[in-house]
Length: 460
Ligand code: TYD
Ligand code: MG
Image (tube, rainbow, N blue to C red; front, side, top):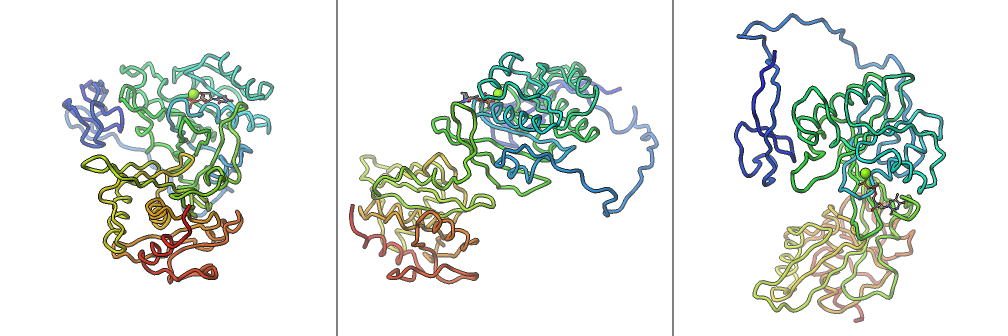
């Protein structure tokens, strides 16, 4: 028999300790350790007895004997693409996100679509009563679709329900934090319960060949365990993010055994639920008003898709001893680096100025290719020169001040041209096909060239 030991588990990342501490050493979260009792199953039998003799497993080759099962398409293009071309039968998928961001809405819409295509689709809600789920579906105009509902939190009951009759094609569990197994002593929402529940459901998915979608709320205060705890168990991890103040929502694949990661899907939250945004560049390019100083368009790549977005900068004299540096949607350290390079190699001095940087639309940019657009926006704000709305920028800035070419140059330029931005400013040199520099545009090899060009533009 296993013996019951006391332990402390981090509710954020799942790391286990024998002693309590104020801060989790694994993930750095404060105040996230909670006491949990765990039944430890000893690897060897009691008192060091030898392990029981195992059963021989048949070894097979890599060659496929049967064709891979067909993927289940939801018909929601953005979701299918992020999942790598639909859901793989027999896989576990985690959908994480802040509470209220729209996870239940997205999954209600996709289940309805799957059910309408004739597949068995089951929605298990642990948070809302059946009537609430129905109400949402009706509000989304999906009240008539043949999705099967249950409000249940007990894992054993859920598995028994799902095992009856024809196995479902897709199951949604909303959410893993409400799952509760009677054989485990911890409270619902603890790491132990979360792991056990997710494990049982993923095992079920593999055995029955259905796609199981687990919803996990991102938690900030460590009161209940976060979705990180089950990330390693599932095949695919998708995060649904966005600013509650904006209507845009971004679905991002951070792990995918069956498709690319870093792919994003863009949605817009409306009265009638989530709407796909097929041409997201328009969304993130600002409102299309007359151009003002401090704004530059970055031709970026998100996943496999080019995306144009507006980088906004505000540089203004500081009243503080230590000027402010505030960044939304980009890396703070990267901004510090760009500022240092501008000062060292182009003589741009912002030591006595507050600097604010914002990526429009609530998007988070991770590419270093945004360096040039950021530098351009900063110089534009500082000098009052206006970057014409027909200009898009991309390229990395090295510490030496050199402009570095980045990948997928052609794709970026093509997206810019598609949206009417004919002038592309990027680093000279590098391999691969480059867009021909626009007439009258200087060849830029150095950050000083870029600063000279921006500062020379007409003032707004
Ligand atoms: P929900 O899917 O319940 O979020 P989650 O499951 O991630 O907690 O969505 C919550 C928000 O979405 C809620 O504040 C209302 C808004 N919403 C709309 O704006 N339009 C809609 O059609 C629906 C169904 C929800
Ligand atoms: Mg919900």
